[in-house]
Picture 1 (cartoon, rainbow, N blue to C red):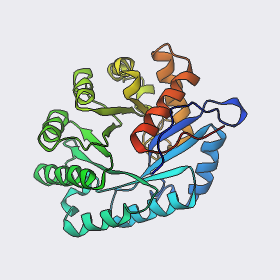
Picture 2: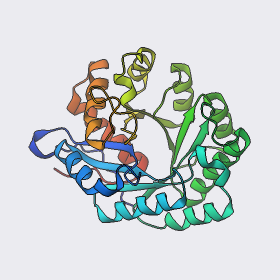
Picture 3: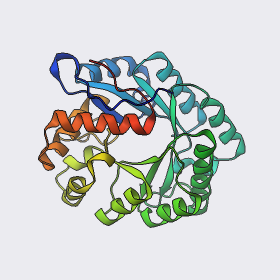
Amino acid sequence: MDKASHTGAAAPGGLPALVDTHCHLADERLRADAAALIARADAAGVRVLVSVGAIGSIQTDRDTVAIAERHQNVYAVVGVHPHNAADCDQRRLDGIRGLARSKKVVAIGETGMDLHYQHSTRDAQEQSLRRHLRLARELSLPVVIHCRKAEPIVAQIVREEGLPPAGGAIHCFTGSTPEAMRFVELGFYISFSGIVTFKNAGTLRDTACLIPEDRLLVETDAPYLAPEPYRGRPNEPAYVALTLGAIAKLRNAQPGALAARIMANAAALFGFSVPHP
């Protein structure tokens, strides 16, 4: 895996170089158009995409790795989503371990807990999270965590198991500021999605202002959670520019400087080299 560089880079046309740290290019709504989506992202200045499998069967992980291997600027994350935690048996974990041999796989996940939908039982989700944390440690990879209405439980499990030495990210954070700071203290990066642009997300915007700059990430979670003015439509990686712009405005930061810091954060976590201009 490449050693991360912390040098900023400019995208074509003078746009700040952006990274979408969490999208789902193998989702059935995006997979057929993945190449076009990647091209549109590049035109918007998105120079690096981290595509997550996890949802559904292991075929989604396989497709995610295949897309990453076809595109130089795309990296893959493999795992079992909390919704599918009941399927996280030894056979599935062995399959993920095998996929992680690809040099394009940069993290394990998204794992975690979702006590809003509870498509899998709480016990199944807890056990799956522990298995992912152990697997990430075994493979010397970071972990990507989905957490909804389960922040104290996830934090406690991480304390018990230990955050993998390679670190981790809480993706699409939606909890409170104290919960975010608790995760930062545990060593996590905090990633914000297009939700920060929603009119009813004032509390989350407050949190986005307070996360230390060296722990901040942005994402789309495409095809989910499109930011304003595209809310309600399928999301895509190009729209991460809108989320970055919104957070820069909230933090009274220059978009280019904040984009460079977030690119460096993502490179440090996922182990890729910052792209050259």
